[in-house]
Image (cartoon, rainbow, N blue to C red; front, top):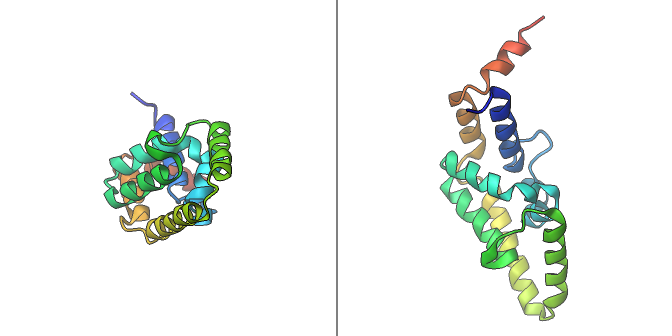
Length: 145
């Protein structure tokens, strides 16, 4: 069984990846390209599991399509350096302008779809935190003098 702090840590990572961090999530901030390029991409599998867990099926499809667009069916490497090397080498390999344009267009479309928030992620994550008892400890702490 997870300690409450372990659950909070998992929830916080999922929430940050999905756009509930105070400064805005990576996808909302810079699109999927930024999400995969930065360390946030290390948590791709965790984000997918989180979307499944909160029932955000539309967002899940969008995130998986974005990963397939960039990395193919193998999905993104969990290691940032390997993702960046793949993304950098893929850009060099894509000599055909139309291929680059199609990929960029698809990612831009997926960025927009995700940012439209088809599943109401904020409300889902808030409800999940409430349901799992992750909010109560913070409320109690905020009332302490």
